Length: 465
Image 1 (cartoon, rainbow, N blue to C red):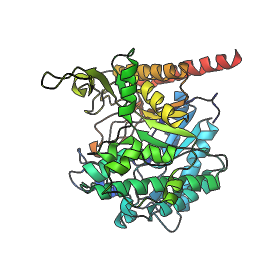
Image 2 (cartoon, helix red, strand yellow):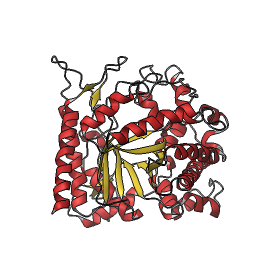
Image 3 (tube, rainbow, N blue to C red):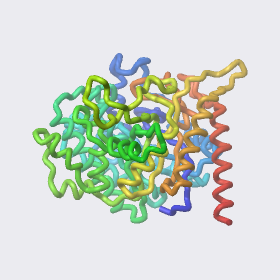
Image 4 (cartoon, one colour):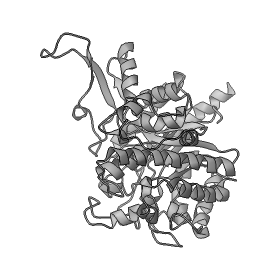
C-alpha cells in the first residue's frame, strides 16, 4: 500500500442503507429475520427499505463526489450474491455491486469492500451459524464469487467487520441478530474460533482471485488514554491493559481476535484462562487464520481515560492501582455508549501499530447527533462538525508523530438503520426524514467537505516540496 496515498472517505453497510430486501433474487439474512420479530428493534422498524440506496445509488454517488472523498467503504450483502448462503450464485446481485463499483471509479472514488458486515444468510444460521465449522467454507465460496466479479476493479478488501459486536452483541448480549444470550464459554470461544477461520478462508479466496489485492480486517475498540500524558509508566500500563483478556467477557477482548490474525496464535494467557473451555485448535487452524494482511482496520466511537490511583485506606500501602475514569463523567453523544474522546484515535493507532506492525486505517469514526431540521429546514449539527474536526486533528497528530495511518472514513454518509436502535440515532452527514428517503445535506457535510479539500491541498503541496 503506497504510504503516499491517504484515503479520505465515508462508510456505510448494506443492511443499514440498501433496502430492496427481497428484490432481484435476494435471500433472507439474519437481520431480515431478527428485525421482523416484535420488540427486537427499539422503534419497531426494520431495514426492508432503509435509505433505499438500492434504488438511489446514483444520488449517493453524487453526494460522495460533492463531498470530495477519494474512497468509499461499503459492504456486500451475502444474500444478494448467494441467496441461501451456499449454492447457486445470483448474477443480478453481483451486477448491482458491479455497477456501484463502476460508478465510483468513474468519479475517481476508490472502492473499499467489506465482505461481511453482520448480515449472515438465515439458512446458514439454521445450520449452526458461527457454531458451524463449515461456515468458513461457505464464506470462501461467496468471497470467491464476489472477487471473481469485482477483483479486476476493486483492490481494497475487508473480510469481516467488528467481530466483537458479531459475537458480543449477537451471541452473548442478545441485542443484535441472531439475538442469542449464550452463557456457555465453550460455545462462545467456538464461535470466535470459527469466525477467525472464516476470516482466513476469506483472505485466501481474495488472494487466489485478485493478485494485487490489499486486504484488512476491522475491529472496534475503546482506547485507554493516559490522563497524565507525561507519565510514561501510565502509558505503558494503558498499553498492557488494552490487550488484556477479560475472563468474564472474552467476546469483547480484542487480543483474542487480533493476536491469532496478526501474530499467528492466541495470547498465552488465553490458553491458561480458558483451559477447560477451549475449542479444538489445530496448527492448521492457526496457519489458516494467520494470513498475510496489508493493513489494520479500526473503528472507534468512544474511549476511556485512565490514571494510577493511590490505594484506598482499607488496603495496605502499595503501588498505585490502574483505574479507568467513570464514563458517566465524560461528554457524551446522543447515544449512551458514545463518549466523546478524540484523543482515543491517537492512542489506538499507537497501540495497534506498535503490537502488530502494520499500517492502520480508521475505517469508521462518527458521532450520533440527533439534531433535527431548524425553522430554515436545514440541519445545523454544530456538535458533529466540532467532533469531526477534533478527531481528525488527532489522526493528523498521530501521522506527524510517525504513526503509520493511511486513511480516515467518517461513519456514516447517511442517517440509516442503526441496528437494534432503529432509526432514532443519527450518525449521517446527510439527513433522511424517514420513512421518506429524501437526502438533505447537514452542516457537518460541508465541514467534512472543506476539511478534505484543505488536507488534500496540503498533501499535494507536500509532494511538490
